[in-house]
Length: 104
Image: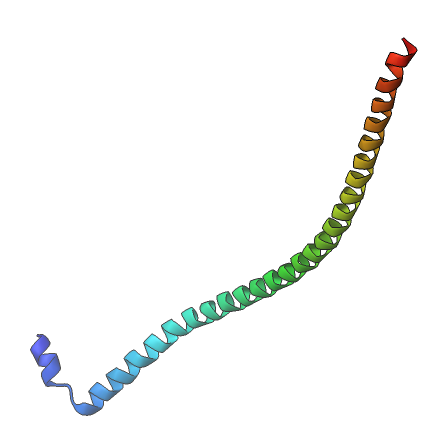
């Protein structure tokens, strides 16, 4: 039976059949193309959102960098003051130790 169908096909019929198959495939794949375009648009929007988030994080990093340097400066100042007070207390302690035997 298949042989009979192939035997009766001429070039015009084969060309028509090719065009029909091409049209069906194009129609079926066009739906997929549209869906892929929508997905691509969504991913582009997501990329834009992530870029905006990255920019925000960069600003936050800058702020933290500024705050970190300020905190480091304050901590260094406090450490210097504590060291100065510790040396003064040590001096006072040495003086008291010298005076204690004299008082006794």
